[in-house]
Length: 367
Image (tube, rainbow, N blue to C red; front, top):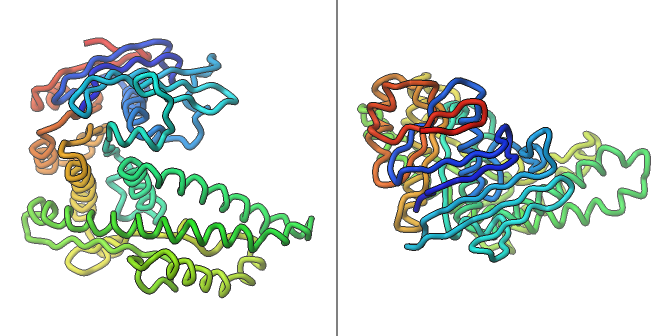
């Protein structure tokens, strides 16, 4: 699968621009703050139906615009296809695949993308939200129904959080507390099964990559951590639902006292270990970067296993953050599919990859 051409109109800092990509490696070069990451964001949006940088679509529309358009000419499922995404202020986004209306979750059935950015190098030592984000972005593309579960859960979480914060001003609000909690428990039971399955596959794929990458036979482990009352995250939905209800019951008074939502899958995490020890606490800086790279390359392998071909790989200014050995390892592992690499006028990286070079400056793209 690949993106052949991308049109951006009113998207971020692009008035109107068009980029044509090679099926292999593409190096997107140019000074800082000119639109390189925005270009990758546009490609990612074609696959995920959402941004990897912003939760709100309205933030992607140019300051002087009321709408933005993304149009991607792609090759997927052995044929040429077209994705169009229209963002309008105050309106839901409109997504068309070959002129047929789709929702964001359905795009992943056609094309997928894996992103690796500098923040991901801190994936191991960052808070749990970074690792949940990894799971959520990946699963939303692999399993279209998951994106809706995530959206519905977040809406319930916001409502429950607002209730716990404001109920003292309006005690009648407490009448809906159990309704929100029950809804969150039902969605959590479904989400846990998705996340557990993904975490297992990620660990299986990352371990051999890390073993090779470390050069020292280090063993990387990944374990999914969820609500403490869940005894087995692979259990059926009914059992998971009941165990989550138990956790909610135990924390009900604490939530009311704290005025915040203390229980739920919004606190899930991936525990990553190196040689059996928590990497977040004990790994060196080199080990954490090696582990993070291994995890992201493993994510790419999972997508290939699902579809039979590599997803579009997006490397956002990540090579400049790596030493020469890690750069070489990454460059040797990205063959076989389409890759877009951003860098700041680094001709050496462009020459080493042998790929097509695109130059971005002030929202314009040229070869």
